[in-house]
Length: 236
Image 1 (cartoon, rainbow, N blue to C red):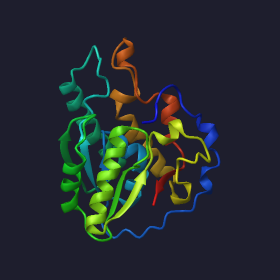
Image 2: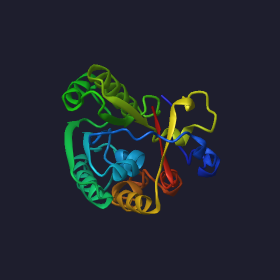
Image 3: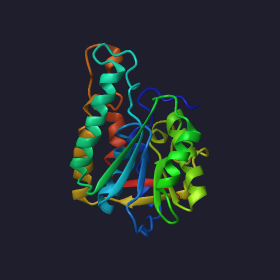
C-alpha cells in the first residue's frame, strides 16, 4: 500500500485539474454512494449528490478505528458519533430523499466478497454507483472499490470511482493514476457551500478529540483544502 502521511501534495499543485472533460449526466435513478468510512461520501462526491438531489448511501463501516489510541473515545463511542455526524452532514447537504444502509463491517477489515454480495441487490443496469477508487492508497478504500466493481459487473450498473487519498500522495501526471478516465463535476456556489457545511459536521475528523497526539484531526486544513474545489473528480 501507499504511505499516507505528512501534509501530502499541496493543493496549489493541482491548479490545472479543471482541464478534465465534464461528466455527462445521464443518471435516471438516485445513485448508490458507497463509503468505506463516514465522511468519504461527502468528501468525494457530496457535490454530485447535492446536484442529483437524491441518493442511497451505503456505509460499509462506522469508522471506529480512525483514532485507535484515543484518550477520549472508545471505538464504540466513536462509531456512534460518526453515525450521528453522517446523518447531520446529509441533512446539511440537502439530499432528499436519502436512504442510509449500514453494513457495520469492521473498520480496517472489510470483507470484499460479503460487501459485493450486499451491494448486488441494490444495483441494476444503468444505475450509478459511486465508490472509492481501487487505487486510492488506503486498504479500505481499495477494497470498497473492488467490491463495487464486482457488483457493477454482475448487474450492469455504472461504476464511477472517486479518489480521496490519491490527492494526498500523487502529483499531476503521476503514472499510477488513470488520468484519461478522469471527469469533472462542476459545483456552483450554492452546492459548494452546502458541501462545506456538510464536511464541517464531521467534527471528530476535522478537529482534535483531545489534547494527546492520538486525538489529532484526521482531516486538517491541508487535507480539507482538496475538497473545497469548485468541482469534483470521478474516474469513469
